[in-house]
Length: 351
Ligand code: SF4
Image (cartoon, rainbow, N blue to C red; front, top):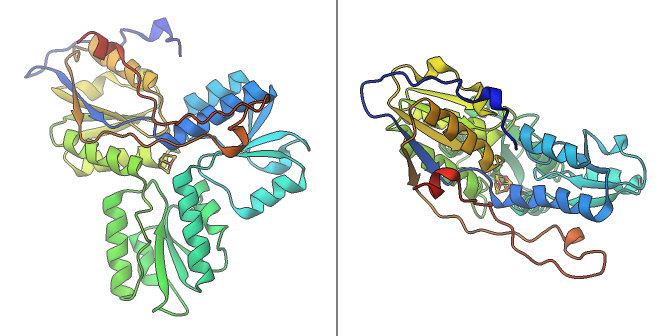
């Protein structure tokens, strides 16, 4: 994304009591599911031409959405806004079977970019529902992923929005309940909710594997390590990105004196830097690295040019393209693996 020149050098290099530095959390930014979903829209546009419709934001990042809009994607809230016979992409957050049916009813050519780790939770919901479990789904009311998961077992799922909900949950058989969760929650808060649920339902069954995904977990672990040393943490990402907002919460919980979320570097306020020696920087799982680079550029203007990366994990998970896009128009296979695209940044090249 080209930078707006007028926005450079807004931040002043004011003296502080120590050597200014940046601790850059790793992993950060794009996860494999986001990478796959964004490439799915790009590839659909290449293959079918504009417009390609996308139900909801493909991933929760305003920069990604506006970039794809410029390339010809049209974002809609529901399938009934899409002209019959069009191409539609379902977002990384997943959809309920009712949405899939709605698209089929309109003869839409659907491309399912649901993250495979969300699909895994959908399958768990279906399986436990068939076994007559009551499902306690820990997640945020109104989040698209939660709506999609609940839609796979609507009769048997109760949403647990926060630990405060636990005393009021009503189930038919307290000995046949299982908990599942949204993939992008705070690990610590979710474990606290599970602890409270287990106090109420001692025979509560766990999911077969963690529903909170590797990317959410890894980004939280990295920012915890950064936060203990940071006077200020800047989290790049959008307000509706659940995993981004959790990174702000986790940073504050783990010792950052202040933590703010920004979509763009231009939102950083001079007063946030007053007396700050160490700035921690991270980004949510739907954030392209170029936006982090811009934050680092602005911080360098303010004297924070010394950047060290704090690495707590290496990520190598890859997904294949949605099956509808694995072959091009000539029938040639595209079996490449898609992971969080790690690009070499300017600050790395110069060091
Ligand atoms: S945050 Fe996790 S669940 Fe969501 S798209 Fe990324 S890998 Fe998939």
